[in-house]
Image (cartoon, rainbow, N blue to C red; front, side, top):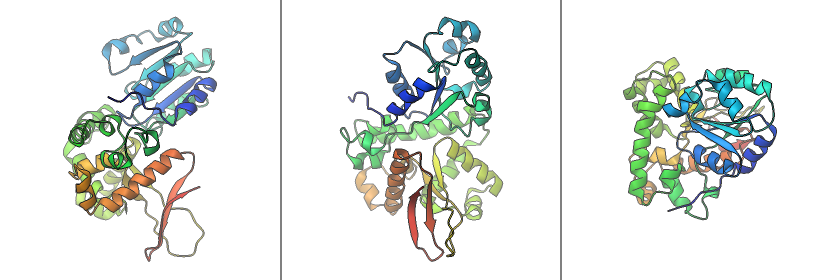
Amino acid sequence: MHGYVQRIKEKELHNALSRSPAVAILGPRQSGKSTTAKMLLKDIPSVYLDLQDRVDRNKLSEPELFFDRYRDKVICLDEIQLLPEFFSILRSEIDKDRKPGRFLILGSASRDLIKQSTESLAGRIAYIDLTPFIVNEVANISIWSDIWLRGGFPESALAENDMDSFDWRLDFIRTFMERDIPNLGFNIPVQIIERLWLLLAHYHGQTVNYHKLAAAADISIPTLKKYLGILEQTYMVRLLPPAETNLKKRLIKSPKIYLRDSGILHALLDIEAYDSLLANPVAGASWEGFVIENIITEYDRWKPSFVRTSNGAEIDLILE
């Protein structure tokens, strides 16, 4: 049994709570947001509400009374994307009392996906992404090859064995398609998102050919771009843009696509064990994506991109 794993974003979170009325921790479901928030607040007077829980949601039926009752505590609201209309209420409350660290909100969607809801909080909220584990966070309790195979989701990375980890990831994929996507308000048939996700696993590390990918998925190019946007905004895929450069050489203009978590990639490709991974043709692209994701997560204030010329010369990752 593993104890709490310290996250590289903890110092940044403490600093944000000390200066901003509201702090949002955003990241994919099961990436450790709730655990990190509870550890962050364990020595701070606070109250925690899980908005997936009906009883907790009902406590906010009269928000002004609730806020007055807990005015001297940090109010932590988990799964905030389920109540997008609540952001305007938060704005009114913060404008009454702008002291730092009033609200800690957790969401399983990116700031772009909830941007319309959070526009009313401009200047009042700090955003911090908390992704699954990277190698440096678990170096003392796990070896890098396990994290590459299993990915960084805590329950997968720290499972007792590879089979338990693999089963957890299959359940995660199924739940994401059947529950999480609809809960975010998107009406996408499960069969289509499943087919697209599997296709993306085979395209991992390649530049995006929208015509070819849309044809393979049996959807239109606008629909493909819409679905890719949803997967990107829910932290499942990364569209790495080509670098903006003044070089006169002919450069590839399309983004490269990666499944952000190597463990999810391997589950989609039915790769259960490390030996099977090394023997699989996808190993090189998988390793490339794994390293890139670790670097971008560690240095997330830098703008990532890549360069590839039409004759095949390439720089996999540029940080500016």
